[in-house]
Length: 169
Image (cartoon, rainbow, N blue to C red; front, side):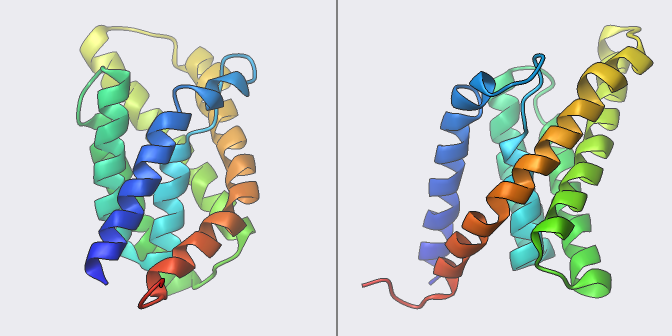
């Protein structure tokens, strides 16, 4: 069972790592595209709990960092905490598996991760305009990711049902 769960996450990681830099860029609006990595991490945290969310967040964030090539480890840390906190909030306070709740969590985490990533980027590479970055990149990416999360939640939820199955064949 544990081997199948790991294989499940690896398959999703490969699919997202393939689609994020290629096909997702084609559906970008004004240079902003949804963050499939964060969408999957939030979905994993909501459906499987805080530990799956944290581990997925770290691994998927590190993979995104390697694809981007800047500030290796920053997205890994941000996504790990996003998965952990989403899992904790969903388990203890909200207990919802709806597409709307998922979209709200994706929006909030995307905003927070975008702001923190921008702050770290600013500390490393110097002064950049926060208002411009927020209005042109961070906020539109959060909205776009939330809309895509709303659409993708049902297929992702069904795929997570495969983990609960003892044997496929």
